[in-house]
Length: 348
Image 1 (tube, rainbow, N blue to C red):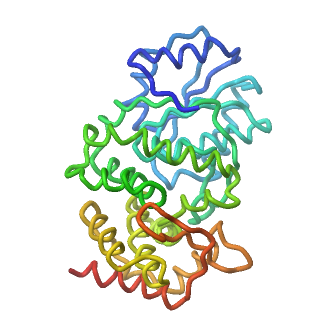
Image 2 (tube, helix red, strand yellow):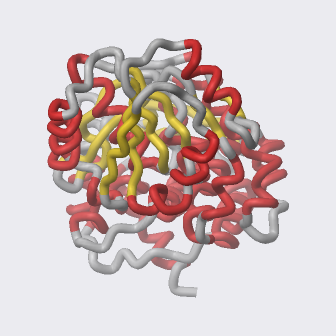
């Protein structure tokens, strides 16, 4: 269930009152500790004792070493199966906190309070938890729903522009795969800021929630949410391996550009629609440099994508603005041509 919080967090306090948790553990990173935790604690009304668990920020911290450290802390603090973990943060915190919760003592309850646009509209919803393995994105994880998702949109006002823009990529994706009107409303936004995005958050969240409810374990239609992520995750992983991590939304914007062109090359999408999509994405996102990455390195990651079956790369591609198909296998030449296309337009 997704609940938008009032300024006094009354819905969260009611939830804690109604459930007999033995102890609360609040997972934050250094950023949410500084900017968001004071707001939460200032409105928290509960007799249940709580502890703060803090990790360093960044995708590079979303690994088994950090998870093991958190497991050890929970053990030392004698967390039992009636404890609650509150994941207060962006996608890294909700992904990793959910994984810790779903595996510690075979599963304890957790809730998500997303603090970034990316987490509000995407990462906190859907019950996917996970961590990275080496430089492979979200390679280890579980399907485990949070008890609740509590959204406080005012947290967006604490974010720098680049973080808002990162989350905006997932909103654009939701429109492209499922709701043409949502896409058209989003591309009317001239400046990405909290005020301009507020009216559209609920729609994006509803799109993802509706898809997840139809296919929790990603056997069919949920795969459409991976549009832009097959190539995007590969490039994000290469930047991570290089020691120069990029924001997830930057990678998704690149992936959507390449996979939109790929949809056109495969005859699924009209040239007019492809040009419209790519020109609008390029209004918001600068191009990434792919010159250091060889095709072999990219294809190695594509072949290890979680959606693949029998060593065949399965794409989710557009068949129109607001329409997406999944489990589509492309010609290798077209995949390479889509990357060449991106490199070419990035030079102008």
